[in-house]
Image (cartoon, one colour):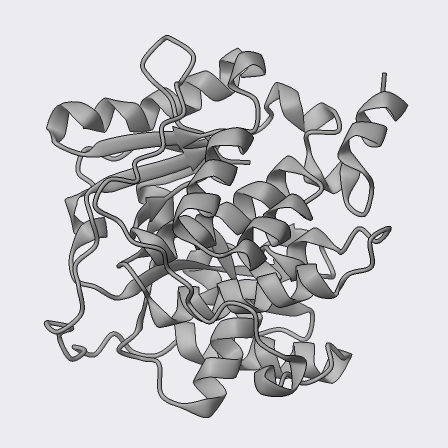
Length: 313
């Protein structure tokens, strides 16, 4: 999940609406307009192969994105309930809030503040979609797309610990910066970037995809816009008693599919920059106390969050 924090005190969620107008982003579009292929095994294979090819490309100099707006020096996080922020997650957040002394803004939103941000700056369709996010992790997924589309900045999950001494390069240029991942089905484990980023590296059981953490984008980024459109459509399309799968609806699956479909339609090399060394910037802290209960989305996927909490008590 995501969060914003102060140093040793519980973070205070803040919503800044000054000087910002409402953004529609054409967020709710029809399934026909999306022209998405069914989420079949073949589609998954094609998506993985596309991402493998994309992330393994040689690091030849790319055209500068001088015309793209820059990334604001803002670090954004989310935690659904600041009154019940675990101490170990607070420590993770403080590793990012320390950058305030270097001129970076650090903002943490809870569920209420995120909903207020969306209602002030986006459309009723987005508000309704956010209310359909039944788990805090899903809320964090959807909110990061909303925030980055409206404001731009660096979104990072609350359980990531910043270990870098300099983060300025993350804000250079205007391209979307994302982290590639690779999962090995056979060993049920992640493949190290040093292995899967090598040109030609592949295995029958490897699945290549893009993480939605971190996300670093300029305001109105077209990939973020499309991912937000798709997530909004899926949430609106779910039945009232349905709990859509989190990963494919608002998480890495949604982002990976978005980039694949945009890349199949046009070149996106100059829109997306692959973060090959994110592990030198931040590490995901494991274990954390919340991972043992219903706040861990893996234990609550497809369930009403509050019901899942009661089941585990």
